[in-house]
Length: 341
Ligand code: NAI
Image 1 (tube, protein in one colour):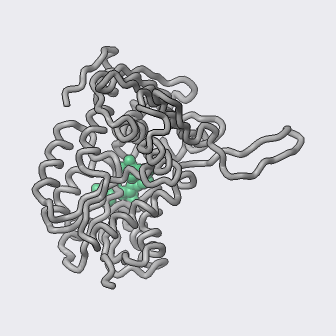
Image 2: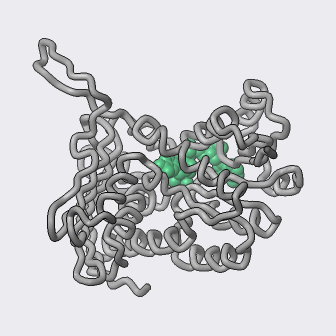
Image 3: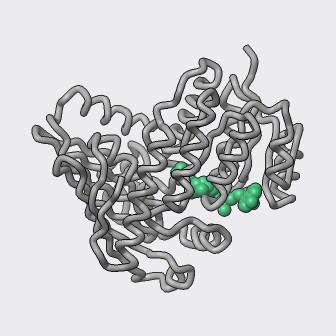
């Protein structure tokens, strides 16, 4: 079978993992080109993995007509512009989350995606491709908890990753805690509740790591969201989890509840030692969602081969950005923000 030839932009914390998956773990895909503004990054990958084309300029990569698809794992402020350019150059496109950082730019890019309906576009909400989240969704659709009415989400990065986060946040424009982190939970909320957000109130601050204030971000934030049909969402996001990477989700229904990862265990090992008995915590996003990152790219490649649409759509990127941006606005103004869909 013909392989889907992919060029990736961004070879940082996540981009390198995606590149490795495309190069070595997806039989129907070929990593034909890599691009980053950092010359050493592309040269190293070309040497180590024998990649045919390397670029330090995104526009140059788009001139390569051997490529079928462009994979975007650059900083979030480049996503909309790069998605538009890649679609207009005729490629299928995968973009990392968030779709964009501002409501205007995500609505404009949605229009461009819709105008290129014959090309595949997919957004990296990988949690939907995680085995546990997918299973929870299936159970909810089977009706085992009745009608879902409330979602409670925690998404907290490990304090041990602080140094890497500060570097990432300083050199990039991430959009801040709600657009960068909580966006995954906003997407899950829409997915599980099957409902759109109408009102948000968000608060937060910097408590243990003043350096986060210097980069104009929040260390821990909380949001309370009202969804259509009087459904509810409670969200906690942060960068300072002492015990490890804490991603936890609970969906409460009219007839029961489902929890995913309420104790974010690393594996099935239990340790009995002089500290007592304990289970270790999963260390970070690459470890917790390792399989989901692979599954979502497999889905993107399969969609191209089978000419079908992925279940994560540009609309999901638009709606989640609108919620995250409303949270940012609520935090900054101290006001309740109505969401105009
Ligand atoms: P990073 O800062 O580690 O890497 C960014 C990469 O893009 C670097 O290779 C950098 O040299 C390159 N780059 C920067 N500007 C560029 C430009 N103008 N043209 C080409 N290359 C450029 O960032 P990280 O953590 O890998 O994040 C990348 C994206 O992935 C972000 O949008 C982030 O939100 C998303 N992400 C998603 C996660 C998920 O769970 N789905 C987890 C982590 C990141």
